[in-house]
Image (cartoon, rainbow, N blue to C red; front, side):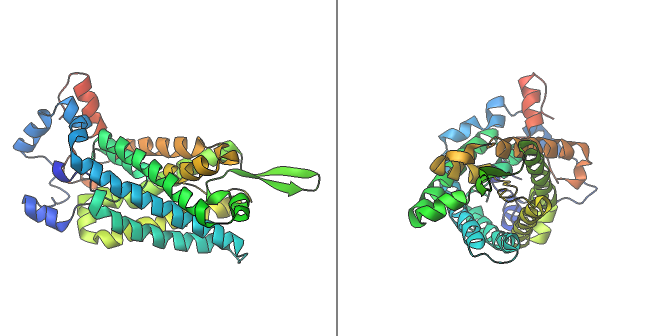
Amino acid sequence: MAAKHSHNIAVDDEECQSSGSKVQPLNATPLPHDEKKKHQSLTLTELLGLNELASSELWRASVGEVVGTAVLVFMLDTIVISTIDADIKMPNLVLSVLAAVIITILLLAVHPVSGGHINPIISFSAALVGIISMTRAVVYILAQCLGAVFGALALKAVVSSTLEHNFSLGGCTLKVIAAGPNGPVAVGLDTAQGFWLELFCSFIFLFASIWMAYDHRQAKQLGLVLVFGIVGVVLGLLVFVSTSVTGQKGYGGAGMNPARCIGPAIVRGGHLWDGHWVFWAGPGIACVVFYLYTKIIPSQHHKAKAYDHDVYNVFKVMFGTKTM
């Protein structure tokens, strides 16, 4: 992916045509000499993307992340509350299907503006792999958290206080307090169970869907609509699986989006902060594991050309060695 378009998680056909570069076949991964020279000359400031802080493009793109995440939180949490409150059979199945549709639409809407992240998992893993700089990832993640707060505030403004209390604004929960025969009791998952579910589901999310957006060949071959549709379907399936396999009331399913979890926690507070670290630590570790996986497998099965901001290149420059 060209540096000027590094904030996009998938390569458009127009980009390939305008840059004059074509997706290389599976057995043609070596970089041209001038491309290698370019990577070797990158400074630590450029690799970290600190120069992007002075670019208005970064801040305009972050607005897209704020708005996209706000809409995501408002819509998803509304769906969570309405499906459970409606007392229908298999509410987790209905929730999963609707979540897949909403996520697909929002990714397509936000992609032209910022690359279509609206999730710290995508931004952090994209920075590790090198598609975007670490600076851009930090700005995006902060924008996503801010958008999540706006979305939760908007939801709080339109739902009744009873629904807000009963469903915790549709936020991410491991346990809730429910009425028991001898008084209120906590029902849900243990923190350890929640952590492992977050880690496993987040890695599967990256491996089974985001992988396609990171690979130039697949992104071009499948097209954005199909790639983002797969992302939405995979997330929906993981929500369904995580809620079905546990069968525990009080557990809202794998969050797989720390921003979506922190928005309602800041606005609603209370027990939403109980075990909240799980919704950050699990996905964060999953991103690191996924990055290590991309470094172990043959390079031709991951990308057609190297990414400028690969965290391995950053460490090499930090320790005084060449980036390539």
